[in-house]
Image (cartoon, rainbow over all chains, first blue to last red; front, side, top):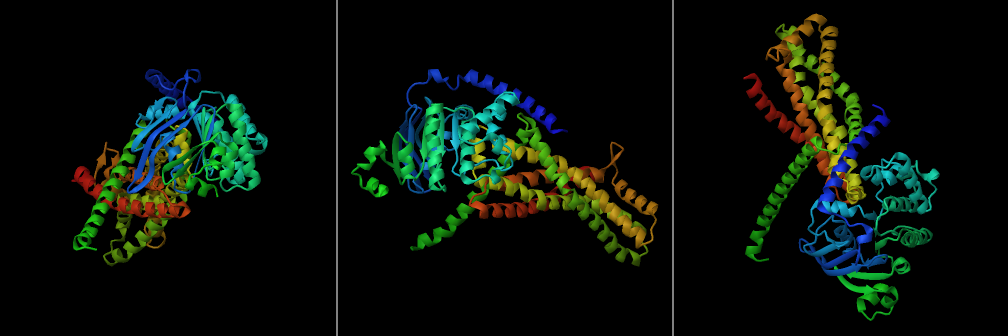
Length: 280
Length: 276
């Protein structure tokens, strides 16, 4: 069996499945179109989560408004990444609600969570690129899985996404992740997250392990995406300087509790002892 | 520590251990059930299935050939020592044929594939787990069980019986080599003896020897065990690269034990159903 015939077989199968999913979602009245959306993009209400005797999150209430970038700061084990997992529906809170685009996903059926995830893009700490796929296939992965687009259109969108993150498609698209530098991996990870034009972007430590110059490049990229794609973003980081540079608002977590939410400038002037200690 | 607390510690340990085992068992069979369901419902990842068949099937042919050849040869050599005393060397074909087709072919093939492909599955999926690639699949609304486990599961189900046939044939040929070169038996005599061994227990549908059928039914179960155990430990991996190594080791040890235990129970059932 040739590679082409396998591709045709794969795409025929998936087209049928996509049709079924589309019909099911239409029946459920899932995922509102952008024009229908109003109010906050993400609304976290009194979130609590405990693993055994360890309290991961305690009564966390936080809102992400449309078009803004919110950074969640905190030390290791403060519960920052857990918040991203809850928004993605990868975990469920013990108490409280996770409302994404007006839909409560904390106890929603999988179909609703899957449908909402299609409007989200996630950038992982170590990029999480698929080792066995080239840069092109990594970025095209979502489009191959969930759309009927012809290969030429997928190729155009992949190249557009790579250019958006300042990578030259002809130079990188045939490389494997192992052949990329740390900064390039992060950029490919961002291209993969934005290729389907999500309305919500989630970043998990986007600048960790990078040198200062690459860190600045990634920060510029996050700002550029916010302007060009009009996305709302949540950035989980412990890099204070980056958070202040890219965020409209900042939240600070300590031991699973929210100790500060507000603008970066106000945070600098905060009288709270933990905030001052953290900034020092 | 009070007396009550001292008494409670081993009880709590026992409680945790039993609950842990129960949870493992539940999750293992849940993965098996999801894989069975995923094997017959869409979406099918055809390309991944072909890749996995290449990895498990084509990739294992070399070791399976060597295993079969040397097993057949050593069986013939060892049995010749005993049989010579009774002038029964003409029955060597029976012994090699029956042993290879009934037991050694299926079990040795499964153990070799476990070492080669089962550990690979655990390591590969484990590496994907610790580098968040499995989470990346979830975030892109792709079910990792369907994308990663089902192709490996179906590929193992299809490839194990085929590999077992290869082992059986090569083992019989290995025995033939020794019978002809060392024991001066003719090819015809040896092959007739192999045929008699297989015909002993009768035929299914008048064509397929029952021994051969039973010997090819076992690898289907072994294939399922190899894939599910490898993927199960892979998906449970934590603790970075060290965890990946641990997952691969556990997968091989657990799969080997499962295969040997399942072989015993399957043999009991098959004897009761097909032969007795």
